Image (cartoon, rainbow over all chains, first blue to last red; front, side, top):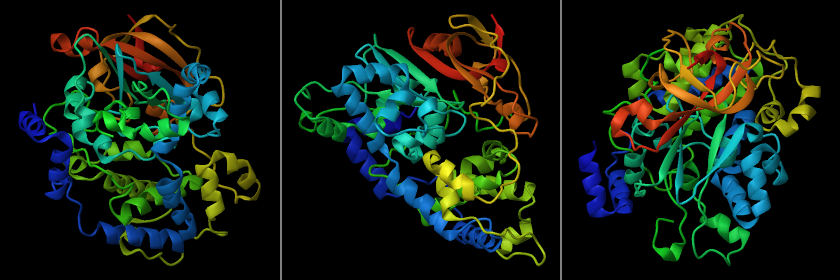
Length: 229
Length: 235
């Protein structure tokens, strides 16, 4: 399926295609938002404030938390530490909760987080087919595509096709392991450390790690290698 | 329930739209819906956000954006909890004589919900919240003994409950093996309906991609699904 889209991606390059899609405003055509939603949400907020059930400062704090305190840089720190310190990696894969606590992420999604390691032979991919389960504390709020029907429907039945849409072609003899996070466990992919990164500091390594790589739809590459950053 | 939210394995949903440099929220109201839902946490709303989203009629579910579904679920749960009426929610005005919380919820209490580290500090000064209904999540007490061992062959039950379940349709009746035992968690099939937490073991169950999808799948690919004890039977 999606032969047209794939053909287009091949012809124009993934990045250009995305720009085109966005510039044309195609992003949400299948999800038209009623113009009155802004008003309906405002009305609900006013009501709950008037009832004393919520406090506007509390709402601001929640929005601020998700815009500024959590995000993929948390996960990137964990990945970079695992690359830089083999002992840490071992602890992270055995018991992510305790390993996250070492980096000051105590009591967040730690106890229910599972980290799975990519290798040239094994590629992991995370999805939630039923809804949108995602390691918020490590990656922030999920992107729209992760919560969307196309990704949720196809990641389990055609993971290699999905990865191809993201520009990642896996060798036939590699094993794809899809994690459908339908319960309370959350999954983070530990990507392969890119070749040529041996001399980089932990901080520089963290800067290379992308959200998409920690979901499993991309690999981590060095900028000069010409891959998608 | 066998609705459109259970979409693993479906075709026809179109291409994946990957947006570069995507903002955390695409409109201000999205952040407010998330914040309203989270900020209501201390009041322990009735029902389950997940289940209320699943109950949205399938055609509407597919049309709605993610946070519109959240908004719909929040409205339903507020009404079910008796905290607001549909008329109040539509008008944005409190009906005369309706409940009003005193003292009002504070930002510190909400922060405590988001950051468990601050929870104990806030707990001492927090206004008493309504009793917590039995919920999903990791259980803080022992549950039923595990019926399965790591490595054991299992079959996902062929069951089609009309209420909330986390047993994806594509696994039902399929043969798998217990990969890991994650310990005891509340059972969403009962907790979402206010029927108790029914704590029991959750396992990572390994399914060969070919068991799920047939010969079209790559021979060595696998899908891991987290399944509660009650979803499984010995193979």
